[in-house]
Length: 310
Image (cartoon, rainbow, N blue to C red; front, side, top):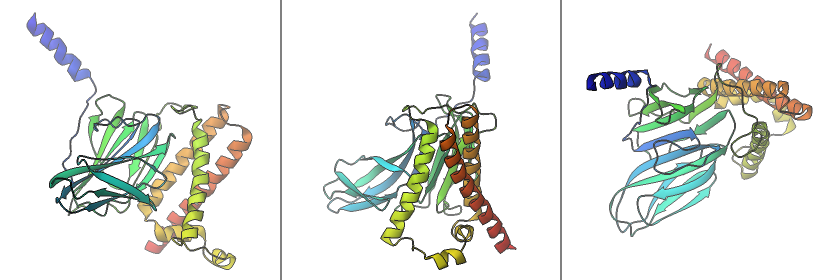
């Protein structure tokens, strides 16, 4: 009887989907997931894309120490924590500066920075590593079931997350294989994915977050121009230098390819929303036109980059 029971249990285990709970020892680690990130102690908010950066540092008592983390473009700072008791932080121009007070005990400390992005069925994020990070780094994506991804690098996948809602995609870097600067990734519905939901977990229509994203991008560009990070161009300069030429000069082909895939996936979802009467005609026309313009610009930038190589 016991042998039969053990055989039955073994059969169940063999048929069950492979799951994994990964652990990493790199001094710089990035984890991204929709909702709660499985391998973190904290419970991240539901209904948003969450990106956590972990930095392992060594503190010397009696000396204040600053640790820096760059926020992904389009993300907002949600929380900062440290295994040390006395810490403060400030944000300026997308950089979080975390200060470890002098009275913290000497020894290792772990600083965690959590950022969030509004829910949308397509996530695109670009992240520059912390200037305080070493060359040993890891990026772990939890890709929701039914979605696929593109990223700067080759991932290994040990299986499903322990709750079975996402596949784990892990990128590891060291001195011989350094982390791309910036590291970028897109997560979007796969060809066999279920139809998009009409609202997020917060009750906000998914397409409205796309519209907000477009507007936010325009506002961000204006802010960068205002602060002098990006030079404002006159009409004559704009006529001389096409947008796709500028983008090709800034972004490498791998980044452009990721942007293209994300934009095409977004266009597909806009069409599905219109066909399912989930989006009114005026919104559909505006959103489609904006994403189509961006997609054309990126594809022309890819052609420009290809021409330069030749």
